[in-house]
Structures are given as C-alpha cells and as structure tokens.
Length: 118
Image (cartoon, rainbow, N blue to C red; front, side, top):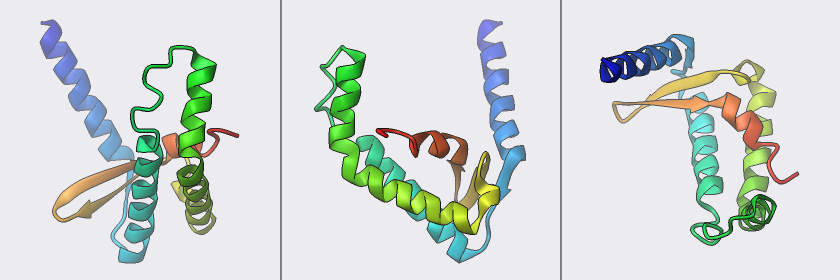
C-alpha cells in the first residue's frame, strides 16, 4: 500500500508540473532557456568532487563558491537577460520539446541559484 501511495504522489506531482508549465514553441525563446539550462548544469557540476569530503557546512559552501565562481557569474548574467525579456518566466516552470524529448526548466530554483555565493 505504501508503494502505491508513493507512486500516486509521484504521478500527481509530475502532472502538476505539466499543468503549471509554460510551454514554449518559439525557437529563439527555446534557445535562450536551453542555453540558461546548460549554464545552470555547468554551475552545479563546477566543483566536481573537490568539496565532497568537507563536512563543515560553511567551509563546504566556501569551497563550492570557489569552484563555481566563473560559471555562476555567467549564469546570473544569462538569468537576468532572460528575465528582462520574459519576466513571466519568474516563479514558474518553463517547458519545451528538444529532439522529441520533453524538457522542464525550474525558474523557481534558478531564482534561488542566482543568489548563491553573494
């Protein structure tokens, strides 16, 4: 019963995201969001495993910021540029299709990411 409940919650959560997603069809808008998504992934992977062994929260955060600095600066610039053109993306999920694959981008999380290492 517990597994079924977890599956149902997962399914409804996925449907909720789809229902609240702003779907893009314009190729220019898709490229901007896709480029931002790629930059966000670079930020997330920037430190590699260099900070994994650090257990102190403040020291680990400092280490992550050290490795993420360049990619985070680029991300923040791209994020601000996209929102200056499309402020309606803020506080939303934005979705598009890429090579017959559905992609969802969480601008709510990107808003938080834009404040990292300040």
